[in-house]
Image 1 (cartoon, rainbow, N blue to C red):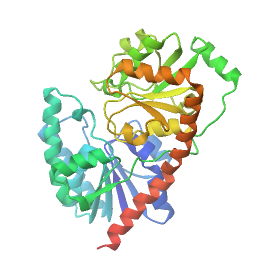
Image 2 (cartoon, rainbow, N blue to C red):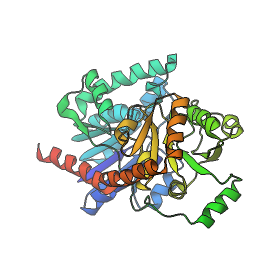
Image 3 (cartoon, one colour):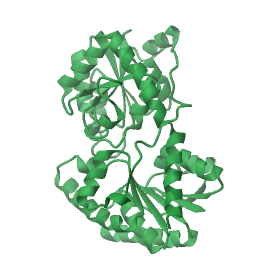
Image 4 (cartoon, rainbow, N blue to C red):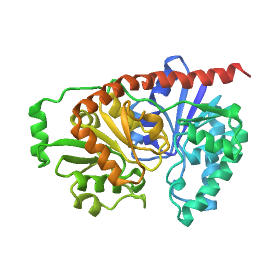
Length: 376
């Protein structure tokens, strides 16, 4: 079977699709990765993938630019003669699905990993884009064989827009790499070196891993850090880009939080930290939470969509009120002061995360692909 993975970003494929792709290849399917050229192109090529580059202006909503990109993609997809295509993210799930239909690809699956910042912000542009996306999804509903969701709330949102139940499939999370993220005791000497390198006082570490976007709860994290600066070191790891929702570098580096930018050694820092925090406003099914749980860390997360499906309050983490830095600080302080509670949550977190092994999740995708082909 010839299968295509269409994405707006090479990063998305590199970090989240490889287990599914490798599982398909292992059983003899031919897989094509269809992405625009970006910083991850070389990384994908080095993985030995059959890489197809297509034209995409991710930031433009100019109708002429969108039409040009659409026509190019439709022509490209026709040449591949695919049996099945898996799309992900809004542009791929709308224009990509339509292009796949025009290219006469028999089976089309769209993955909704979250609704994104346009469904959080209330400015005019966000409202306009949101209405446009909703309209385009209504077209996709009629074309796609299945829409796959990582949480129940997004599925319900699309159901309210008119998506039929028989087209809904929920696979919670895209999985976590348990061979990369697992508990490792960090020697005291290593901790001392970190404290020295970053000029941190020798206190507990509260870690947040996320892009430095306002809607990830950066403001609340920094305000909580100010309230608890005498009790713990607060560390933020996550890159910035040209997204207007990014917190300014001046803000990120001017407070009592140790902002480390983008890093590759996330697993090390997760094992190094005492508490993991994600005070986001809205999520799909956060992989960073799963990575923290895989490293046996107690989590404090906001009670927003997505986070509440990744953590069970009082079992493997604690909920804080969304956009409430004082409540966030109170929940972090509780875990800092109660080591027994922190350890119990951490133990439960590790046990719970095993069901989200990326290889198990990949098999669920293969199963729904096979069921679709057998059913027709």
